[in-house]
Amino acid sequence: MQYGICPLSVIPVRLIADETSEMVTQLLYGDHFKVIDTRKFFSKIRITHDNCEGWISNQQFQIISEEDYILINTTEVKYSTDLIAPVITADNILIPLVLGSTIAHANLLEHTFEGNSINTISNKNELINIASLYLKAPYLRGGKTPFGIDSSGFTQMVYKINGYHILRTAAEQATQGEPLSFIEESEPGDLAFFDNNEGVIDHVGIIMQNNYVIHSSGMVRIDRIDHTGIFNSDTKSYSHKLRVIKKII
Image 1 (cartoon, rainbow, N blue to C red):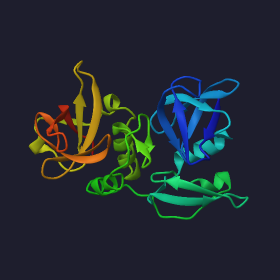
Image 2 (cartoon, helix red, strand yellow):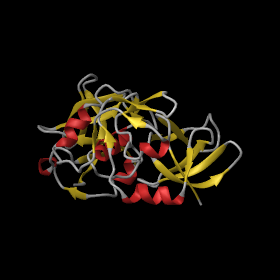
Image 3 (cartoon, rainbow, N blue to C red):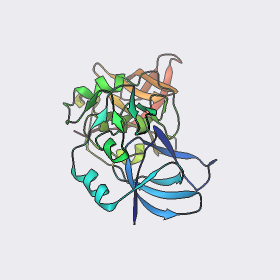
């Protein structure tokens, strides 16, 4: 078994071993993983914090030892809290890191982090503060950064920065937590899930106060929510049909 770490700002993780393949998620700086298959140009990985699998270019990651992999798993995490923050490489090259990058083990890469970070589990109320940092981020299928993010990538990153791990896709996240019967029972930070015409959960957002939800649809935005779903104030129509609300923490 081989192990790896992301030494770059962002790495696309693809459905198949082809650079034109659909991006299923992204690795951010400092994310670590197991290498479960290797080919000439691509390797299949399993990301440690959510078990998401996909293919990445062999030119874009760094192999680490099993001992270092275990070390990362057993020591405290630390995430960058600036929209953009630098690390400096051993040869004095600046790498810009995006919000939510893992910087606790930058020393394994011989890098020096220069920015703000968090290493504690935050109060649930802080979820909305972090979520607001992503406002206007464009929608990008498989994305997890302020430069492009999908609905479940958005909720996963907000929870991650606050010290909580949830799964990658909306359908997977909907298997976690405690279901609530009514919106009135929800608190800011709870997750609202929405399904398509086939009944498949394909969208998720974060409940705010006063019947609002923050979510990634076209961009990260704030809309009204009720028992029917999300009411888009621009189109004056419902954009997503509510399936369930879950209390994760």
